[in-house]
Amino acid sequence: MAISGLILAQVDRYLSGPQLARLAAIEPGARPYYRALAQAVRSLILDGRLPVRVRLPAERHLAAALGVSRTTVTAAYDRLREQGYLESRQGSGSWTALPDAGSLGTDNPWIAAADDGLLPLHSAAPMATPALPAAIADASERYPRYALGTGYDPVGIAPLRRAIAARYTARGLATRPEQILVTAGAQHAIHLLTTALLSPGEAMLLESPTYPHAIDAARLRGARIVPVGIPDDGWHLDLLVSAMRQSSPRLAYLIPDFQNPTGHLMDAATRAGLVGAARRHDTTLVLDETWSELAIDEVPEVASPAAFDTDGRVIGVGSASKLWWGGLRVGWIRATAALVRRLAVLRGTVDIAGPVFEQLVVTRLFQDMEETRAERRRSLAASRAALVAGLAERMPDWDFTVPAGGGSLWVRLPGPFGASLADAAARHGVRLAPGSWFGVDGALESFLRLPFTQPPRVLAEAVARIAEAREARPHGARPARPLTPVL
Image 1 (cartoon, rainbow, N blue to C red):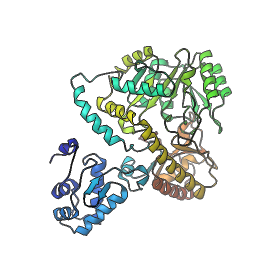
Image 2 (tube, rainbow, N blue to C red):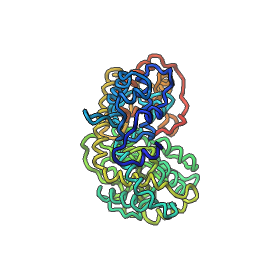
Image 3 (cartoon, rainbow, N blue to C red):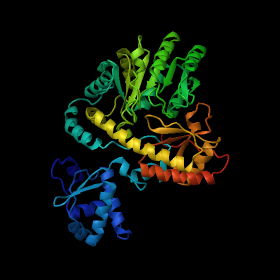
Image 4 (cartoon, rainbow, N blue to C red):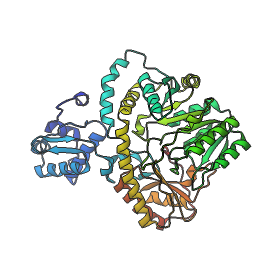
């Protein structure tokens, strides 16, 4: 049976013993065999070759096809059930499944494959939402009708632009689809905006610490970077206003919602004051809203800074990566309709348009927004609690404020050893992001960003390894920036 046939089947999908044996392709000498079998099936599910909700062969049939004992297959199925990759009902059989993120352990192949076996605590990107498979199936049904056109739409497909605009409107910011440009992620959006609105040598205001790739975008454009520090209690409006008055930045990039990496949430008064200062000093605000949907605790509702905008100088940047999955590579810009048209022309010189299929997937995911937010709240709360508890037990002298949302802790170390600790942690199997990566001038050596987007068991293991690395760390080492993005 062809693999594509499995993917397209909608009901009563199943595999025979010989079919699964052929797909698994286990080395004859693999030991223990039950674990190798479980890992092979799990890999088939994770890379899409074996879809979810496919009925697997009975244990005795698979055992006969593999030439092993039924006990071996039973042990493999038990392991898959324990890890969440198999669901069973007595008398009806067993079906493939995707586990809830909280049930995954440190042997999760996604984690190992993502970064050469090191636990990827340099990245705050979460794993895919459980809603993704259903959205992919829905997009598959709608995809063929788009083949009747050229497939090129520089502003994004109409259904997705409507869905994004409707979400802004539901959150209290009236938005038309004409104000939305779909991009290949938030980072793509930032590059488009800096290219369109910033000339070499002009000033660009950035928070410190901030998203590292925003620093990269400013430098790539040849901007004069104006950093503004974020104290432990969040933004100080007078510091932002002073920086605008003294440097006259053409652009200012800020993250008001669960700021990356500090997790701060900007209050309404600061948002209003920020927009007012931008108007007085002729600064365009680029506000990264990538984490805006990921409140974990109950927080006061605060309006988007764009609600205080009267002359189109507040631009929003959003992304599907943190709420749903980074692999979709779908983001967006909310701006005036005139700027959207201008950006679409500029975008045509780079990549013409985004892939239609992924846009269809995200369009479907918007329909289940609240369910996904609830699932993320639950999983992130469990992971945050595990990380906080682990640090309190193993590193009680590390200082941090637990954020009400977002995906990471911004940890103050008892000394300027973030770089040497990251170097030592890599030798203990953990990739870390030292604070210096988030600073404009390489400062912040006394800080470390620790994400809580991995499952609790992974974080518990990571904290144990970091504690070991702390005792063994060399002095003076500075880790190189990773080849993979710092998200």
